[in-house]
Structures are given as structure tokens and as C-alpha cells.
Image 1: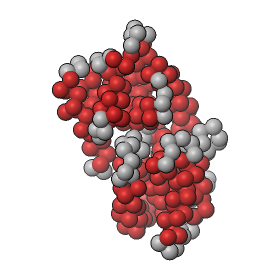
Image 2: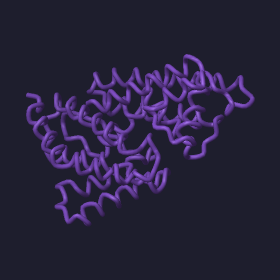
Image 3: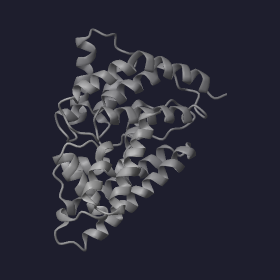
Length: 289
């Protein structure tokens, strides 16, 4: 029999114990850092995805337990806390240190899987290493795989288009490098996702559509780039979307959900306006879960 009834209880217990405290902690951590793509709202979305993964896995895997659920919510809620210090891969180590200090400073009892939690937080963005393992019926999935999958699934679809553009621009990537680098990164990510989630066809069906959307967007971005001599000045089309993110978010400190009202004033064309309307709807939909 599926573990669904027990899993619902484990999730509810983990959320009751940790969700409010860690959510408040993240809001405080990011209060002086403007990084919408990876701030507390990103962590909440990743938890929603992780919870959905657990629900699907419970239909064929009988080895889930409360300690896995508790460990996962803690790992999710700390995994990018180090982004307030650095946007590079090293943020995983800093996120781990923040998790350790959170428990130490508050004299909290460490959960059963604490060492596994810390390892998952530190290594979740080490895309050059093997951090994904196939999810099978025979053994419980490990926390690093679950965290990495949930984090990567959040990087797809219209939210993923925004998230990739923002973090790549923050890291200093040029407009001409951006599209090619994103397509290479997301292709590798989705290949790992497909292998790990082979037994979760519903998950793959939903997120394959989101992957296709993102690839189509940046393919079109690259095509438009070939026609422009000064891409940073373009206000329409796919380049217009990325330029709006650069100007209004990175430079203007506008949150993504507030972008539709801003871009309409500049009359950048239907594609740009539609994109940010879709982004706002997607973000609001995630918050309502």
C-alpha cells in the first residue's frame, strides 16, 4: 500500500515544527540582500516541489520515514542561505555553516539525519559532481538527490527563465554569453532529472513542458541576438525580457511580481508584457500552495 496517509502526517508535523521558524529566519537573512531569484520565496517554492516529489515517491517506495521528511525541509530551507555572502558555488558551504550555527546558537536538538542534511546543503549546487541518484522502490531516496531535484525543477518554466537570467546577470555574464550558457546548463540538469525521476512520470510530464518552454525561450533569445549589434539597448522580444530584468530588477530593485506594471509604462511590445504577466501569475500560484 502507498504511504500517503502516513506521509501526510509526517509532512504536517515537519511543517508545524520548522516551517514558520525557518521561513522567518530566511526573511531576516535576506532582508538586506536583494536577490529575488534565490531569496526566501525561492526556498518556499523548492519546499512545495520537494513535498510533491515525496508524495509521488510514496506511491511506489515504502522506505520513506519521518526523519527523511524532517531532514528534507531543513535542507531545503537552508540550501541557498549562503547566497547573501556569495553567488558562486561556495554558497553551499556557507549555507551549511549557517544551518550549523542556527542549531548551535539556539541550542536546538539536532534532527536524526543532521549530518546528511548538512552534506546535502553543502553539495546541492556541485553540478560537476555526481549528486543525483535514481529513485527506485528498493531503498529510500537520499536527501542530496531530493534537494537537488527540487531545486533544479524550480529552474524550469517561466520562473526558470527569470531565475536563470537574474543569477547569470548578477554573476557578471554578458548578454552574448547568457543564452548559450543557460541552454547548456539546463540541458545537463534535465538529463539528470529524467534519469532520477524515471519512476515519476507525472512529475516528468509536467516539468518536461516547463523545460521545453525555457529552451524555446533561450533558443529564440539567441536567434534575436544574432540580429542585434547592441543587445543591451533592445527593449522588445526575448532580449527585451532579459534587459527588463537587468534594468528593473538588478538596477531598479523591482521584485519580479511587480514587473508587469513597470514594463507596460515602457511599451516594450506584447511578448515582453505577456512574459511578465505570466511570471507574476506563476509566482502567485506557487505562493498559494
